[in-house]
Image 1 (cartoon, rainbow, N blue to C red):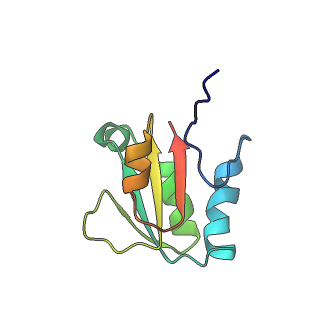
Image 2 (image 1 turned 90 degrees about the horizontal axis):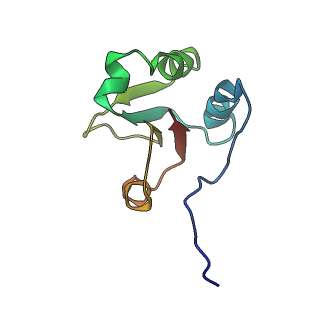
Length: 100
């Protein structure tokens, strides 16, 4: 019998409307001030990122989208799929995975 492992973030939220709770935890628990959001260009073109960026703005967080030079306290990966290598390549700061 072989055991297979799979990638999971440190915390998982499975509930409609949980995005605001997860993002609020960035300020309340982790004291994050700067967030880097990584996503595909298609998500940007279709406006799918608006709920995330609107929530970050409402929390008063400084954020950038797909910036290579932004020094962040947290990374949000908004994508349809991610593999272990991509996850491990993210900076060693709090990370949130949002599956589209």
